[in-house]
Amino acid sequence: MGRDRDGAGRVAVTVSGLGAVSVAGLGVDALWAAVTGGRVLTRPVTRFDLAGYPADRGGQVPDDAISALDALVPPHRSLAGRYLAAAALEALRDAGLPPAPRRERLGLFVGTVMATRPLLDRGIGPGRLGVPGDGWARPDDLLAALRRAVAVNGPVVLLAPGCAAGNSAIAAGHAAVATGEVDVAICAGASELSLEIFAMFTSLRALASDVVRPFDRQRRGTMPGEGAGVLVLERAERAAARGARPLARVLGTARAADAHNPTRPHPDGVALISTLHSCLRQAGLDPEDVDWVCAHGTGTPASDGTEARALARSLTGRRPPAVSSVKGQLGHAEGAGAALEAVISVRALGEDFMPGNVTLREPDPACAGVDLVEPAGRRGPLRVVASPAFGFGGGVSTVLFGRATDGRSDAATAATGVAGRVGRVGPDAG
Image 1 (tube, rainbow, N blue to C red):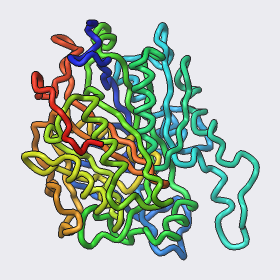
Image 2 (image 1 turned 135 degrees about the vertical axis):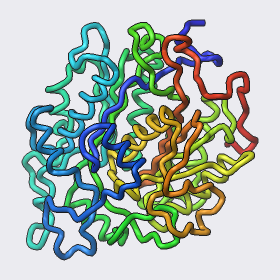
Image 3 (image 1 turned 90 degrees about the vertical axis):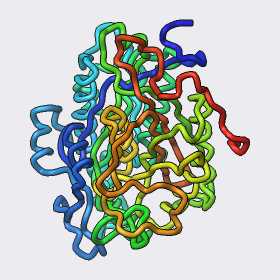
Image 4 (image 1 turned 30 degrees about the horizontal axis):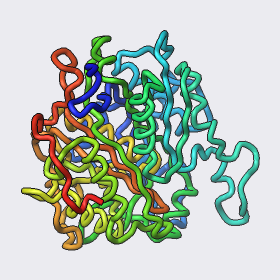
């Protein structure tokens, strides 16, 4: 058995690099400092006029961070595309890989909600019904700045499964690495703020006016956000051979759809339960082996209760699962949300720290059955982290991460803390 396979014969895939652009600014360090520092970063949006909307707050990337992009990535009309390029360059640097690969087959796997929207908002407003035809939301616009900055010589895949987009991109990149289709996968999610998104959430009556409060009795809705999150994936053996420092292992990925309602998940959380059980089976782990769930947690009344109940049912063991959502701090970055949460999940494993539910004041009894992490956060140890994401239309995508070795002693073995305890999933794994 090759050194790039784990004890069950599966190909061992590591995360070797991270990158981020977020409401905290440029870089993973800025994002992690904001999340662990308990800062709520949503604020009034200034990029466009929200007069007449019931709420005007969101997770806007700071103006100074946008100005700093000029020194990092090519100019382009799509902010989402520039966020994506900057985060990808950071992730490649973190992985110790050049933007122009020599021998590596480099693939690009990007998730989004609606690609790029530089012109779509011109169709929003009184007397401006319809959408402009020139360059409207072209998917290739989202990738243009990145492809000018990085020499992608493998497959280019753009996925649009709603707000599960980032995790779906990770799943696609993981499969390409595991099967040998690519040597290196850039897996990402990207999004930019838009009047169109504010109009959509207004029509759904899902906008919070003051702060997003996931799992709280007083939660009233969510806030749009933006940014980009990027993970670089490669085989453990290959990363070790070039002296890379593995950040985490991808233990499992799964996608499902309940097809229950265009905007609400099935009340029993059947798709989330299915993906969690699938990830655990792939990893050979028991539900109780999951130390923390970086939850989707949008702060909307229906979604949070469904998610909490599904997590409680799926991860029941000696203790309820520890759960928190960072959307109370960052807002809901849509196409970038799951990817940014995956970045946070990997960083949490390295730091042995669970970010808290910063805006939680009064836990909702409808969200009972899980251990909601206190606002200040909680020290580990962390060995296994689950990161689920929901999308409109009933789509759910979940990624299971495990602690990585240091790359020098045993790059092919998952340091999950359950070595020798390959478990089983209970009879209701379904």
